[in-house]
Image 1: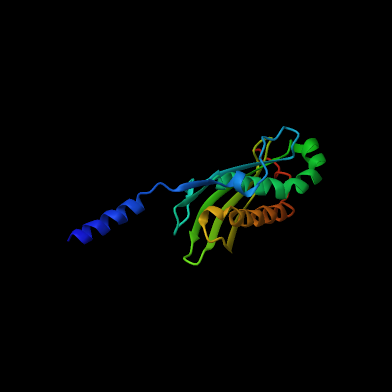
Image 2: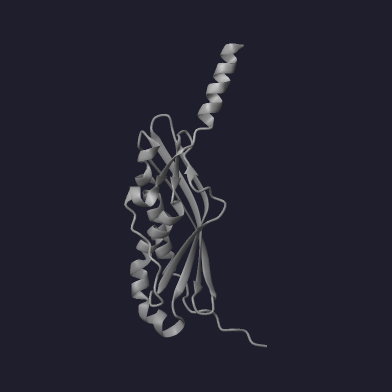
Length: 186
């Protein structure tokens, strides 16, 4: 009986440990995201929807903080060329665009052999800044894995996951009509 109580106590203590928080932006070397000026053609806004922050890594005592910010930085970096290419259109027509990138799902797991698997799901909505007109929406996802042996060394795996979301979003922007449909007046 004493052995069972000791095992149960040890298990509860292990389960209630506070996880080590790993801030992704500083650890992975992601670029800092700054507030855009009105002359910036594309404003990137990132948010989380029902995703824990920090994100616990199953199979470890680590949680990743700043997943949403890392996603926003990846999107801002990947779309900078698109934004610059559309600067004249933005400044002469409608003041530019805002893309809201929502992190809608996230999972991270460290397997017994030291393999970290990260999965992220996101939704992006493009609107005009002037008038907030809806222009389009898309779903994006990534799955990435890598041998890290310890979850506190997994930030580069997370960043390798968010980078393709940014590139996919930049490609999607090329296909979206950038002028809002004409207003329906009655």
